[in-house]
Amino acid sequence: MTLREIIPGTPDYDQALRLREAVLRVPLGLRLTPNDLADDARCIHLGGFEDTRLVAILLLHPVDARTVKMRQVAVHPAGQGRGLGAQLVACAERVAKDRSFTRMIAHARGTAVGFYVKAGYSATGADFLETTIPHRLVTKDI
Ligand SMILES: CC(C)(COP(=O)(O)OP(=O)(O)OC[C@H]1O[C@@H](n2cnc3c(N)ncnc32)[C@H](O)[C@@H]1OP(=O)(O)O)[C@@H](O)C(=O)NCCC(=O)NCCS
Image (cartoon, rainbow, N blue to C red; front, side, top):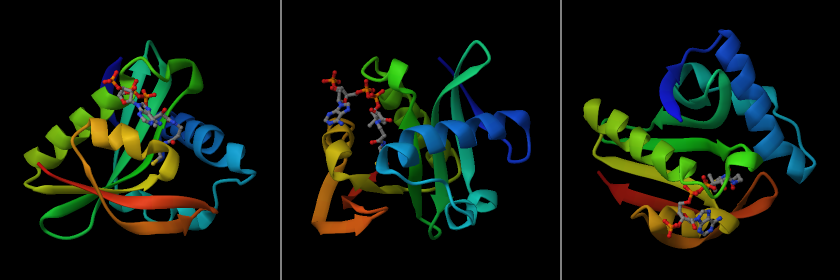
């Protein structure tokens, strides 16, 4: 998998929207809404490609001078369980560090908390509902 930044408004971004909707919304009976996309222009979009096909996506949303939030972390179902998600998160941490952020956070789906814990994140606080399903805050100093 080759990792690179995706620029909103490009054909790669259209591919990313399709992957985000297919992996993160359709299984919940939802679609991507304008609200989901409202902060896209403020985010760094990282895509993982196999040839020209986008197989993994992650957005980095600056929260404050120190903290950046990972959003919309998704690996195509055919690519899951092959280490691609771990590679994507490691790349996101390098990109965030290069831009002087020192703390990563994410709202992890309950079903994915173990993935973040494997990557060195701590789960804190109580469950909360987002996009209809339980989530937890995960954090890591980078
Ligand atoms: C969660 C997701 C991003 C993980 O990506 P992936 O490529 O499948 O994960 P990897 O193969 O890189 O796994 C890395 C490690 O985390 C573990 N892991 C992966 N998914 C996990 C999960 N859901 N729960 C617990 N552990 C998990 C793997 O077993 C692996 O452990 P190992 O290093 O001991 O082998 C991906 O499965 C996905 O897109 N799922 C559907 C959407 C989703 O839940 N996104 C996260 C929203 S917060």
